Length: 149
Image (cartoon, rainbow, N blue to C red):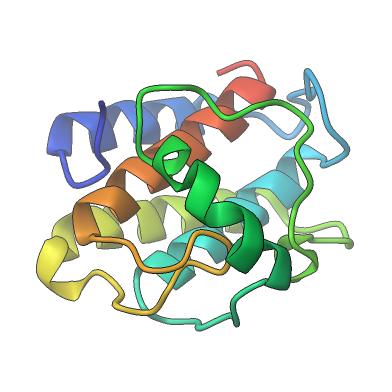
């Protein structure tokens, strides 16, 4: 499974982010491309230990049964619900959001396991740095595919 701690994986992700355009159309879901970029940045801020969202009640109940899906080699299902704190309702500046997402992806990779958050994932709970890294790659991959890159 690919890990965002791997520099080759990071390079692949950055190329795919660079291939996004303000006119990139979603293949599924409700977000526009600028909102998706901001959404992915918010997730990386959690993994980098910059933000600390609380655990979601449904996650406490459901996560024990599906937690391994976050870091296995399966793909994230299309159109699954997003926690309200990660929904970006307003239009964003595409170029700013693109640059910010690249910055956070690079930061997460370069900081490595030692600086990965110890805070629980808002849905899945406690994760190892490697599990965070695989999950962050899967999340980015899911949304980049959502916009055809």
